[in-house]
Amino acid sequence: MNRIAFFLLMLFASTCNAHVYKCSEGGKTVFSDKPCGEEAETIDVAPAAGRSWQERQQTQRPVQKEQPSKESPQERAARAKKLEDERNARWEVQDAAREAGAERDQAYRARMAELRQRACGSAETVELRLGMTERFVRTCTYTPSPRSINTTTTAQREVVQWVMGGDGGYRFIYFENGVVSAIQH
Image: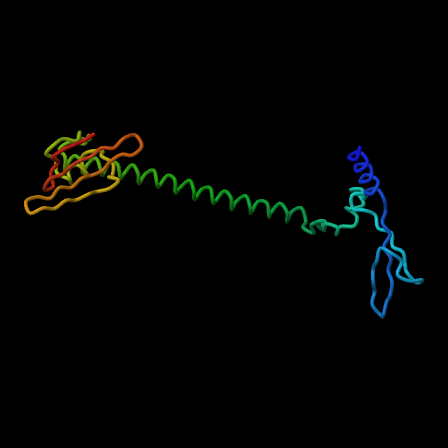
C-alpha cells in the first residue's frame, strides 16, 4: 500500500509546476520557493520532463544551415573534374608502386635461387642434416630464424643451440664448432 501511495505522489509531483519567487533584498536579487516580500515576482517553472521534444529543440541554439553555393554549374563541374583527376592520379601511383613491388619480389626470388644454386649446388631447398655448417643451414634450408640462440664455450669447443618453434612444439639444432652435431624435435 505504501508503495502505491509513494508512486502516486511521485507521479503527481512530476506533473506539477513549481513556483519560484524573485525578490530584491538589500540591492541583491534573491530567488526563493516562498514569497520573500510584498514585491515578490512569481516565476512559473515547468519541470524539464514536462516539456515536449519540440519545445526543447526550440530553446536550443539553431544549427547553421549551409549557405547555397555561389559557384556556377561550370565551376562546380570543373572542381568535380579536378577532384576526380587527383583521385585517379593517386590510384595510378599506388598501382605503379604495387607493380614495382611485385617486380622487386620476383627479382629477389630469382636472385636468391641463383645464389642458392651457387652455394648449395641446387636451386631447391635442402633438408637439414648433420654435418652442415651454420651458414649452409641459413642459406640452403628453409629453416626459420631461431627464437633464441644459446652459446656454451669451453676450452675444447663451442656449442651453439638454436631454439626453434613455439606453440606447436620446439625444435633444437646444436652446432659444435660451427657444424650441426644434433637435431632434437
